[in-house]
Image: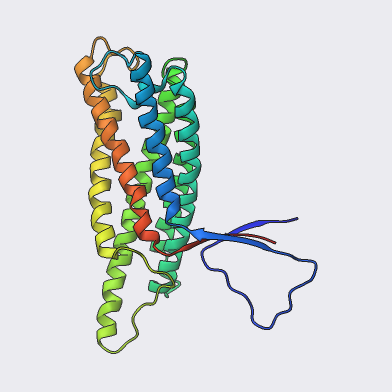
Length: 282
């Protein structure tokens, strides 16, 4: 049975003869373009839905600053929104898996002690949180606020709440890597060899960590105001007439949350650097 293998580094055993019955097919391309493509698809889907909503004059819920999903509850923007965010959710899965592999390489280089598994465990926890969260983005877009508001809200919760775990787990992993890198850098000044990661990122670990801290903290505040706090303050989650100001406040917090996610996943373009994405069939 042919299998598809995804690896960040492909190695070939020297001197080993290749079987004439096996013809592996390998496709590789720079990993950094995947988060950019996801960001492009998500932006076009959201902005396109807003533009179509304004063009056709469809309802936005009666609040001055609408929820993103309320701009895409009518045709034809509903189709664009659901299709675009479903594709985006698939790309997020790719990014989550690639980032997991990238961090595994970082950990192997900077954490040679097999007994020190804290970083690896947190990286795996981030992988699980990301894989749980990503599919719900496509589902919340498919089940819109007009025909299935309760399902839509359920998938919103299942998307944003695991995202908090993912962002903070990644931030925590980068903090551990940065501390370890500082320790190794001090040792290298004493004559010991410095670390050699087999790919080059387009940003320093310190800069990447600084931005991830800011984005994660802002995202946590925005999601908290949007979901648990905002949901508690309104009388009805679907009818905005009695709480126009509060729902507008929640909508602004939602937009900030989405912007933070775009910045976080978009920043992985610089983290991935010249890391290659391999798909090997053989």
